[in-house]
Image (cartoon, rainbow, N blue to C red; front, side, top):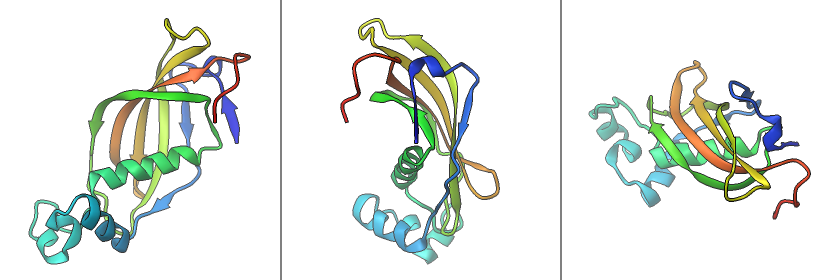
Length: 154
C-alpha cells in the first residue's frame, strides 16, 4: 500500500480501486435484521411488492461496504480525520449478487487554516455495481497529512 500526502493530490485526479465486494442475500438479511429491519431488506415476497421489486441492501450496509473498499485501495490518502460528507445519494438499489467497486475523484484540495501540517481534500466517491451503474455517490471531506510533517497516529 502506498500512502499519498496532501501534496500528491490534484483536482481532477481519479483513484480507482482494484478490489470488488460481492453482496450476498444472507448478509443483506442479517444486517437488516439488526440495523434496518424494513421488509424490503429481509423478506423476498414483501420486497417483490415494494417499489424496489426485489430484495435490496440497507443504505447503511452500502456505506459500510464503501468504507471497506476505501481501505483496500493500493494508494490512499494519509488520513488524519474524516470531516463529513456532502451530497449523499443512493443512486440505485444494491441487490444480492451485486459486485461493488469504488473510485474517487479529487474535487478540491486546500491547505488547512487551523492545522498547518495538513490539508483538506474533498473527493467525489462513486460506488458502482458489476454493470457500471452507480449505486452510491457522495462527496467525502477529510483532513490529510502534508508530506514531511509529524507522523500519523495509527
